[in-house]
Image (tube, rainbow, N blue to C red; front, side):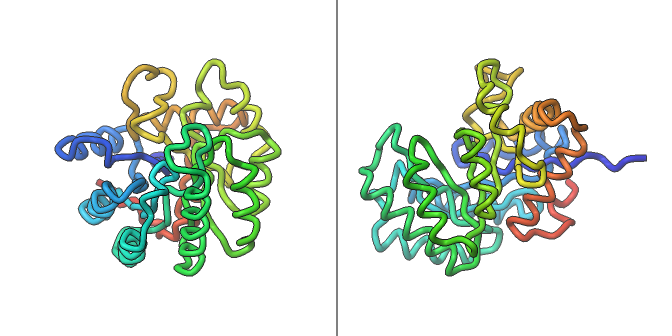
Length: 266
């Protein structure tokens, strides 16, 4: 008799859900076999919420502390000290969500690069992995990562570049995060990117509340739906769903240095 599959949603913005519904969201996830979630901070405003979610749910939630490129201009000395303190708190396992976003440009390019560089160095100094955001910015992100490898660990979350770029992520020693985009009807580019990757270098994610996968398009995304991401990957790789769940969960535990007993059964 096989043990039940354990999925982990490696990237879900539970800070964007109402506080009083998080328990229900986690309950629905658990009912689908999704036992654990990583919640990244994105700004000074949600940093404490992300950390508190990990503290309140130690058996099922871990957090990353970081400043998203959209809010890079807010990374002053006060926020830097807050991040440094947060990284020493229980349940905080990474620096993130950090990176570059040249599509929206909510913060100036120079501020984004400065925030990225400082947070990458912070992660290396703390011995923690990074949770990376990339949009139309790989040409600047890749060299920043390469300068710190080997030594830097992390995941390129919801990655959407080409196969060569994804293989470069792996070459740098990082993991590729795959979101619900892999299920989209017109996302052949994502499936082509995923095809040459080894399952043990990939982690499934939802990026909740965004990017709801098929068959949940048009709804608010949530961690329970990460199973659909895994199912589509199984089709791309022509393997069983159990193999995808096992590889993704093992990659998650390895990257964030969590024991095999995490997530704890509910």
